[in-house]
Length: 314
Image 1: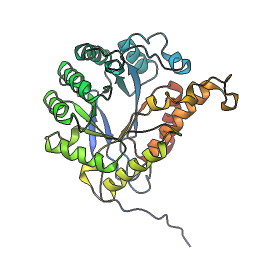
Image 2 (image 1 turned 180 degrees about the vertical axis):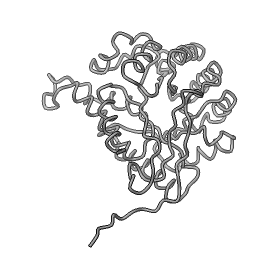
Image 3 (image 1 turned 30 degrees about the vertical axis):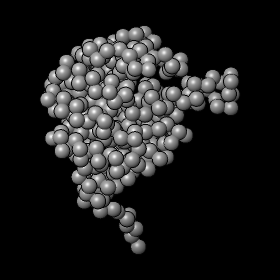
């Protein structure tokens, strides 16, 4: 008797979204099946990995994360070039952490200047994250949109409190928005509806459902991402049929497990290997939940995840 693999019938499809400038475009999305269920449908565009770059030298990173970028850590543009030229980054994720009013509180104009310098330095698609302060992000991201007009940056976080201002600016200057919500499928759908009502084109929206690190709420984030994909593919929910981004690196590398030296916690093992594996395992989990774009930090963790994607796509 011949065994037949049971298959799910999908009636929905994730939109294909072009990112980056013309001539250097990366396409994400397009799935017609659950993640890597290639026996049931198609994944025409494998998940992409964006490497982090910060707008100033990070003060809270462990040495194991700083080491690969030690020679460029003070220069964001040089840092971005190294990510592309040395580590083969498919995308760059610029974190404008210094704009935080509770940190350095740099101005919107200064943040926009740094963003343009980084954008000028690389040809790959670029994601720009603000500091998650709604008022400051509104000023900063509007300035970024203006100075980088036409470069199709991926701008976020765009939240319920500032979607009108940032969404309208992104439309005017031809950028893509990251619709960011706090780990809730209903809030994610509602924000996408609001952006649609604002006339943000569907091909200019990426879902950012928020994420946690391994051991720090990842299972709940996984569940929400999984439900978003189920609604998009099985229930044909058009307001959830967008690619998903997971900004996971900053969540992983702030956990105590990647920062505690082996001398203080010998049972945790080698500190460098530990951090790399926690990042890689977190990335692997969100891949299986449906992430199309991973924001990662350590080159060795990225290498592990790239190999995994390659294996899963064959």
